[in-house]
Image (cartoon, rainbow, N blue to C red; front, top):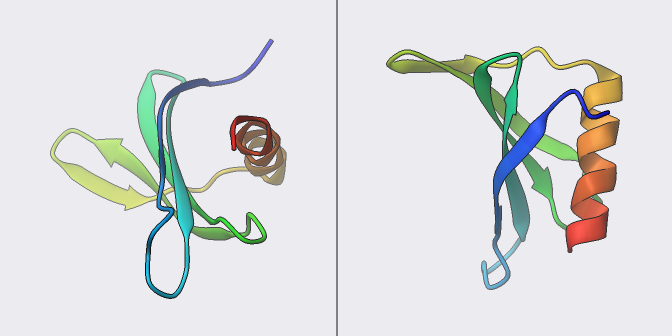
Length: 75
């Protein structure tokens, strides 16, 4: 069973120089967002949303790899 639930995904297809994929997901009751470079699915940034602010997220390598695999399947 997955440790998270993907709640949304944005694929930037027509950006001038680089294309990105942003995945929003719920993990342990908190909302997160990870942006990958579409070309190689390397992490560009990741955030955890808390109350009225966002902070850089500290996600495990396993979580990032699992998200990366889910993104590959969806794009």
